[in-house]
Length: 176
Figure (cartoon, rainbow, N blue to C red):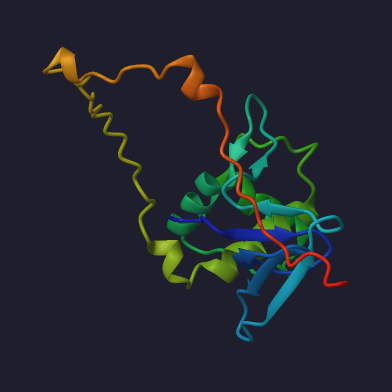
């Protein structure tokens, strides 16, 4: 699952794909049927990448990507508008060790809604990009001076201190 470039914007429903950035903010495209493009201001809007979102867990935080993977293999994913108890029961199936006190029903609804938005996208079934870290270092050999007589010689101090100045001749005064 490749969630790269997918973001949630604070105060706006749904998910967006990050297209680019300009001076004032980010250019986003909605992932719904309309595919509308919007610009959100950097100073007022908060963007959260789906790759970076975690859910509170009992011992350690759970990555959203891992929860989506478990939701993908689930038999039936309820709708986001289902009853809170039904959503909580389902969420215990896919994220058993989440912290029940700090993960609210509204958070679970949001995660289920996001899942329904991205489950049909090609990014969802796409494998994650594997970063190949081939650390082949190419070391440059220092160039050896073949003929020491042709090596660069320092200039004399006198030649280094002289400056050449370009003089522009003007027409002068034409008064007789």
